[in-house]
Amino acid sequence: AQTVTQSQPEMSVQEAETVTLSCTYDTSESDYYLFWYKQPPSRQMILVIRQEAYKQQNATENRFSVNFQKAAKSFSLKISDSQLGDAAMYFCAYRSAVGYGGSQGNLIFGKGTKLSVKP
Amino acid sequence: DAGITQSPRHKVTETGTPVTLRCHQTENHRYMYWYRQDPGHGLRLIHYSYGVKDTDKGEVSDGYSVSRSKTEDFLLTLESATSSQTSVYFCAISELYYEQYFGPGTRLTVT
Image (cartoon, rainbow over all chains, first blue to last red):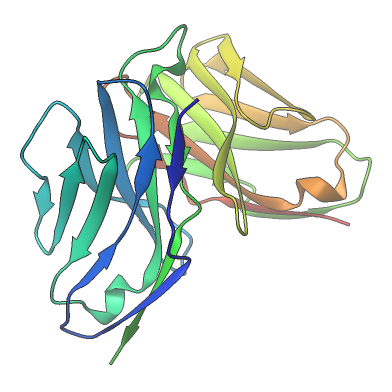
């Protein structure tokens, strides 16, 4: 079974600085998807970025980028120019590209990293 | 935001009572999911649906049942609520090869 590990329960960054959140995963599959979700105090789960395992190029969305190392099974999120609104829980998630029945879309989540942003 | 609503948003109930949570979508997505979120556990899948009347169990399905009689509605039922089911419940939707979008969550307290 696949697992997702976020080894940093909490992190802190100064406003305008850069921070990297770590995520590792375990799988025997070669084709899968990885995601970062943000959960601010409002509790809403917001998709930040998505990476397809077959793509070598790291995904980027504005100030958010990932470092995807497939061989190392590592998927870190870099937030540049951190803003106060970036303060939230961040969850890394894995989704298989194969499966039986309707299970292909199921997400496996890490336990999350709480990011604080200092003004 | 994806058109997903959850009702109720907050509920307090007593141990042993039945509870039904509703997820409603306006996106016509095929897949729907129920998760629970607890401190230290992240989000864990309870049940999911891959079509009308097509449902299956997730990681933490004991004590929960689901039904999907229409594309837009996915119901989660706690037949006899227990204190261990106090949690925040999230519904999500997706199409097969795309990311999941989440509803606003329901905070359930079982006293």
